[in-house]
Length: 275
Ligand code: ADP
Ligand code: MG
Image (cartoon, rainbow, N blue to C red; front, side, top):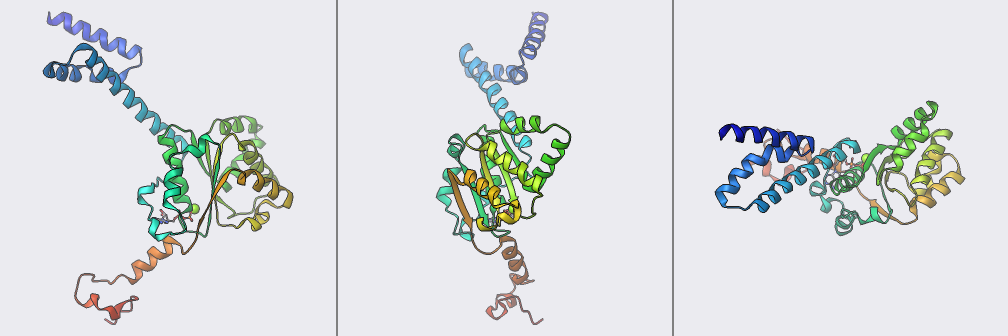
């Protein structure tokens, strides 16, 4: 009897492996033991097991999408302090995190000074899209332009663009830090223009629109780029002081012996200590 059981278990594991159901393979015995103890019938057992397989598949797929997106760091909306950035509407951002803008092929532009949370918000929204099953790619504009020039030189531009076309959302971070060459600007325009009404874009920039010509070189290209980007687009301004700077200032002004009576003296505000 024991031998038959062992034989059928080996076969079962083999079949589940051949069917590519690894979680069912690893979980069939512990779930069966629980089902027996709880008096669960066969169909409910099968349901529990198939649910585990499905959950694990979804988890792995989300993990793969996150990896493929190539985020430099992971940021979430939970860790974004909206009170520190009143120009950013929390309700609007939470609504955007539902990702309906991707279904509508709309774009988001984050415009504001360095350190005001543009990349944080862009990554948080894009990571939310990953977990909802969208194919996402994060790229700094200068890196993307370099890559475009490289693949063009290698006659692989079409294949590269075909990969971009498969995305649901492309994040173009830090537009405007470095002026693009004429070729770079044209290739970037081509990416933006190909994405128009097909792939959503999230673009972050420290440059007001009137200065975009400094990056793209020509007025004609800037006009055409802005025309495509801003048609059906949310423009979110991250106004105010740099969060990094604020953080640094807070660290400097923080009393060294916080908690001691001496440092609670309001006269020490501003970080000027006399000791
Ligand atoms: P930007 O892209 O506008 O230059 P970042 O998004 O890179 O700025 O923000 C700089 C740093 O400050 C990051 O570590 C980011 O997580 C943090 N940060 C910025 N704004 C906020 C905020 N409102 N709440 C929490 N962290 C923030
Ligand atoms: Mg940034």
